[in-house]
Length: 249
Image (cartoon, rainbow, N blue to C red; front, side):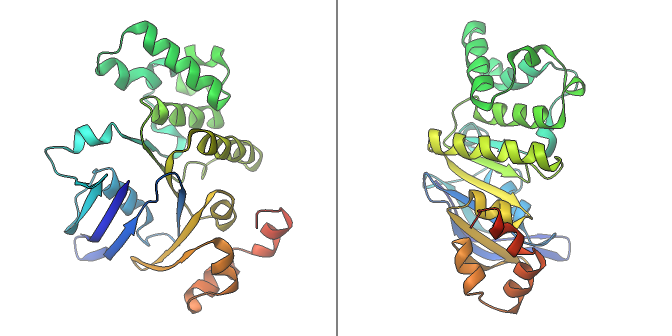
């Protein structure tokens, strides 16, 4: 669905992404993982066209992203960031339905779709009338997911969507998200810094370091056959024996 062909990106004198080839497999969940500054979030922003590559090209369903078509293509991509990225002056329902209304959906259709998304993400319908400041962190994140799914996009991109949540809220949201991904059969790409979360979600895990793909495959492949010392040290720093006892692997 989305493909990067020899894409590189620099900010000033710092190259955050070396020439990279990457393809999201339709219907699967790909997880990007690695230390801070390795290029994970940059890849997501390139995929949705928030930034342009210095070299190479980004394709959506075989079509290169360009300034002329990027706004149209973005309607086929749901994007979730930490804490939902909600507008504080809009109610929960208005936040979720904003783009649909902009595109000319009739009010009954918007309301019906918002309620459908609330049920899917297990957000209480009474929360739809509240403002973001009146909601918990987990509820705000569920709203962000609802908004990303509102137009039924082909691809969902999530940039550390649970990084700011406490462990119990995070656990519940992880469980619900995986069920949603499986039931809707979406193409998904998640950025996380947590190896356990990568193993929980990922059909494929891609470990980045210094702006390049160091190793990819099943999480078990990275654990049992690390490509180099960087992979080995990154895995050891995650204390994965604890993860294994939780049944993630």
